[in-house]
Length: 172
Image (cartoon, rainbow, N blue to C red):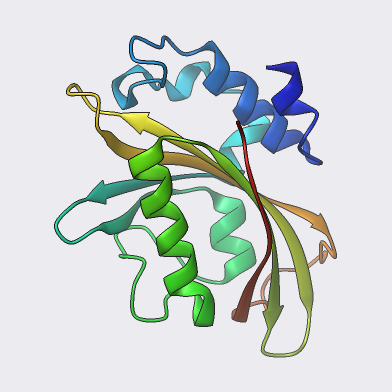
């Protein structure tokens, strides 16, 4: 686990990787049923998100979103499918990466850049970790979204209009 935590820049990312690493692994990957919010480190919770996967065709739907995401992105994605430009021009690329995670069960970290309608930039680190259902199929993704730089002191004018994935690193 030390190798994984050395690859991230932010405390919430490290906390999520450490928590995920403590979960039981009957099939090599933790089960969604083993998640326990009470056991998660409190500083992680505002940065946390949970996606549920459906197959045929592949879909990813936000089931949970921390307050940092709501405040910094200017909207709640809870209940929304990642489709139809939800994440700007990167929507298809992000969805393809999630489908790859669902089939390969290989976690990954991305560096991304958000740009608001007023030109404010926010660089973020995003951790993507698979979770399994009872049959061993990837049913969910748990992740964290944390600013790396450009963290504005006020979030009320930061509805993002542009989203770019600048780097993808699989955790192998």
